[in-house]
Length: 235
Image (tube, rainbow, N blue to C red; front, side, top):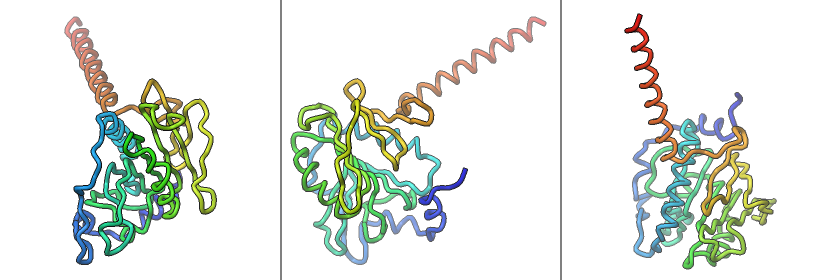
C-alpha cells in the first residue's frame, strides 16, 4: 500500500528530542499546560470527548505522523501566552506522534486539519462564531460541532469543510457526515456520536468494546484449548 502525503512528510521530519515538546517554556516564554480561565466541562462533554479520543487513537495507533489530543492548549502567537484556544479534540496530520505539553503553532508549523468541539450552554455560541473564524483563519480543513444534548444547535451535528480560504458548512444527511482526513463518518446514533469506517462497513469499536472483544476471544480460546486437551486424553 502506498504511503500518504502526510506519512511521507512525517518520515522526512527531523528527529527531535521529546523534551522539546513536553517543555512548558519555549524561547524564554512560559506557555501553561493548564489555565485558571479554562471553563469546566459537563460529564456529557468529558465522556464523549474521551470516547472519541480513545477510539481515534486506536484507529491511528500505527501512524507515527498523526497527533491527537483533547483540551490541549493551542498557542498561535509567538511570545504571547494569552493568545490560545483549547479545542475539545484536535487531529494533526504530518507532525510527530509524541507527547506534548501544549501545541505551539509556530513550532509545529502545521495547524490541526481536523477540529471537533462539543457544544454546551457555555460554549456553543463561541463554537459557531469566534472559534469558527479563528480555525478558518489559521487553516483548519475540517471543523465539526457536536451537540450531544441536541439543546443548542439546530441539529445534533454541524460540519464545515474548507473551500479555498473559507470553512463552508456542508450538508449533513441522516445525521452523519464523512470526514476526508479521518476517512471516517461521524454519526449521530442512539443519543451519542460514533465513528463509522466505510472500508469495513462497521462502526469503530470504543476502547471498552475492544477490551470486551479481546477478553471474549481469550475466553473462547481457553475453552477451545480445554476441549482439545479433553479429546487428546480420551485417545
